[in-house]
Length: 115
Length: 115
DNA sequence: ACGAAAGTACGACGCTCGTCAAACTTTGAT
DNA sequence: ATCAAAGTTTGACGAGCGTCGTACTTTCGT
Image 1 (cartoon, each protein chain N blue to C red):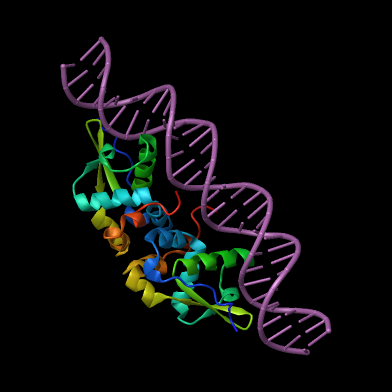
Image 2 (cartoon, helix red, strand yellow):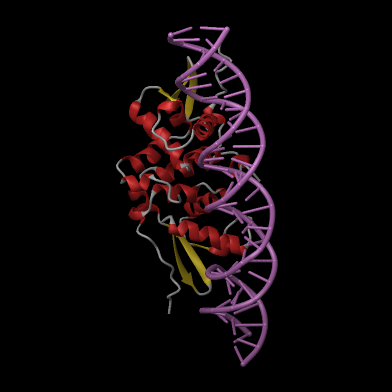
């Protein structure tokens, strides 16, 4: 059985503050973007992010608690899905605006402003 | 003479990262919201924000450098205007989404998540 | 000319966040 | 039964941000 499924908050109860704190980190935004472009579940380990495993775990938790992603186990892999529709209902236009702003941006603009 | 007019960057050159860093602070978001609801210039000292003068100055600078506001002196007062249209052109839908998300939110949701 | 008003500049301080390594857990294969 | 793979947890560390007080600058009244 999977008690291994973590808690997913109701998106409508999440304050904008928490959402913005989640989206302000470039690594997390990169995760969201990759999920958008893939529209299929992606395992934690299969993302193109330049951080250690423990840091990755941290970022996924922040995203999950901010209502942006859903996570469920498949074997030893944790799969991630964007909670696209639900999120858009609670925060109309927000995710589109954020993702679109960087969609065709030069690579440099996608990197952290401060190393 | 007013060399006292500070530098205002071209909004199109500003990375999303910088914009999100500006908008993630609740005090700064409150400033933006007040400017939206007033649609007239407001002096730095006339905002309803619970921080010291020097902290306020800091927040206005962050907002200006992120392309969100324009500042100009009138006497000893520094007036602030939202760069609404320009900003919307560079980041379509973003400011609307952020402001609208909190527009009719309960007061508690407008306060910092962490004191 | 003097003083008050409105901001700015400059340090300083505390807290939080992103980061990592190391140890641990759970699942799947052999 | 073992071992490897995939994540999580915990603790630690460094950098950055928001905050303030104090000193300074500029402008407006009187």
